[in-house]
Length: 400
Image (tube, one colour):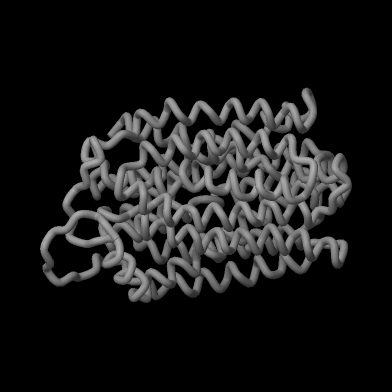
């Protein structure tokens, strides 16, 4: 258990840490290449959509053959994508590297796959806490990596900074060795009570699964819009780039505490109520941020509050899925829930760029984020968390 947590947390720290800093490249790349913000935003929107879609299949492969191979492939693609992001000379090349390659790599090196390993190797009475620790690691990666990325850009330029990060991404490969699972040794497949197809049909017929997906859609919309566009929003308002770097770092720092606390609370309280509270609190925090005078202090307060709420939905939502459906195919339903998250991410980052280019302001997208927060709070309240009742069936290998 300790080895799984350490290696899984380290992979998430590196993978999510690099990804959380992409907003710092929006203006340098757009200005250097002569592209609009929509061009950059569209590439990241593709990344989020590909990440979610590929996550479904990464989860299926990890459930079938183990996470080890998936994570190694993800580490290699991450390095190639970051290098391609630095060297791309056209919007199409940039979209392929930033959107497709990095999107696929994130699917294999983040929550859906890592949580599947944790779910299979940690006892149920400690599972939510363990997932909270892994999510907190991703947040620590943001706190550690975002200022580092800002320093790399200012010291070496945006292209060299991306090349340095591509080399750092290769560290994911040796860390993957710590997540090898004995049950998948030599390609053997554990016997399970359901096939992948049966598990998939069961999940999509269950209303609570659909509600969790709807809530996670909102999570993706809010966090990716803020993470990518807030640096430019603050610069447009006359604040220095350092304020944006510190703001994103504060989100990462406070999210360490928020995700861990959410994981602990999810072990004791109703997960649906925790999720409703998180989404409603996000809507309130954004509202106050927009109404208050914009200063570095107000930005830091907002970032700290949002940090507590940032990825705290991750361990709660994933542990709810595990509690309802069990852990045998956890990466697969987790992948579909995360795909919903990434559809929201696609719309959040893309609409941010489109509506800014059309109106010269982010105001409309901020309003949408508030309304969606209220919606997500309401849609999570009816979720039924008790384990689903299944008719007895013969054990079967985990094949489709």
